[in-house]
Length: 336
Image (cartoon, rainbow, N blue to C red; front, side, top):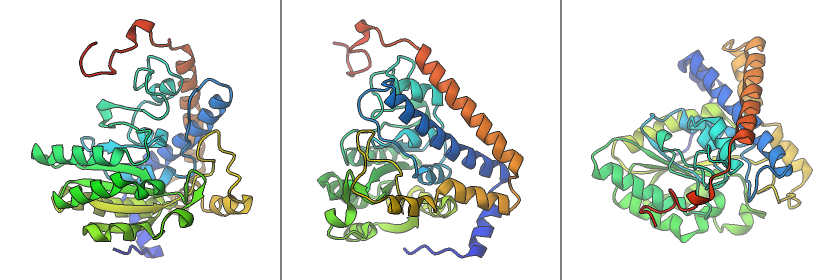
């Protein structure tokens, strides 16, 4: 399904969404950006260990998708899930504490950057294995249908996952059993350091799901309004019982694959071209142009978000590490 949007359609979207919701979405995008910038800084100071994959540049995807969901819907993330869990509404302090490995973290300090989990927000986990969350999302979709619910499970993954066997097995079973799963492929053009055109025989990833009869669409992943409009349609399709929906969001990460990646496989010019399309700056201009926000609102959001991020770091620094005797607690279903 091709999605096109005229300036009139953009204006209609701006007016259709209540001003307070616009403010909330803008604030969420800025929070993710500042949180990730701080996470990168803390990693370089060795306050965060292990691997760390930042979401900077992709903020519009998670915020646009999450804004179309209900609180009782489910979310499966990837290892680049800091932005996804923040967009789902989790406490930034608990997320930062988890990155620090502290007991006050969302996974009680045992998951770290790639295994964020928040049952209260139905955020069913980040996953460290590429494509590993797709079959789990299909399982959540099956559970929803088995129980007679009308929730939706959103499953985020990157372009590198579409070449995994789990991708095809999950989409096949989701289509066959008409499971309420919204598959969101965040195509940031690189699977680690490999350009998608060098790894996929069909780099137009939306076409990869045609064989499963799944409704699908591409969207500009740097345009929050376009994502929100498509998400409204896709979520409704899933909730109606007609089966899964596939979204390919074409986006870009400004930083390397992880903190250890200098990203020398792409040019500075390429990165700058994408920065011109920055999703936060774009949305900010749209809101200012429509008179929905003014300069004072922008400054207030900036100040508020900076305070939240600084408080998150203080909270993480002052929180204790998990006690040694808690090594196996919450790790296995049964006590050992």
